[in-house]
Length: 272
Image (cartoon, rainbow, N blue to C red; front, side):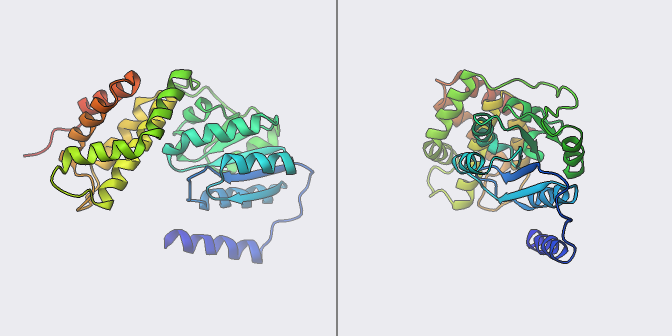
């Protein structure tokens, strides 16, 4: 509800105080990653860039890489700006970056999905990262062609072949892994939808952490999901058994299994 109200406010401001005509010929396409439905930050970025003189094409939420590639080939924007709040969408970010690179179009990333310092933007191959809309506008004004990394993010490593292969395994086995993990903690019960949702997010964040080879991404999600009290969702005392069940099922994926074991070792001790 809060997001919907905010979107209505942005629309009202844009309608009653429209951006001035573009001051140049450069165009930026703004899109959310495939599977990212939180489009308000991208919409705000689009409005800010329009008010800084850019021609803006706002493509909306959850844009598949194939559709983005079609648009870039057809419209030929000078820059593509991608937005996401969920780090679980980082593999989708890589696909979008590759689609743009095939046309020589630079990509500027933004949103919490890419880490507080933009480390995961570099890992997926983006040409830069901005912490907010004003910073993005300033970067594009200073250098419309990029790259826009102002400093080297810590622990930023490009995605390697092993990471891609193990992430692909997790993606292909997602439904199976949800069943394995659910059965490990609710042996005599049907898996509730809320639990299945939590486990699905856990597998997605695991895949993203493997993809960018950064355990802190998954550790952060594990700590968060264990602190959320949803009656039929994943409970704190179930997180450890779920990680163990997934590690056993993914023994043939060494990087993934090691990440799961390390995450289990970092769990807080349950209070009796």
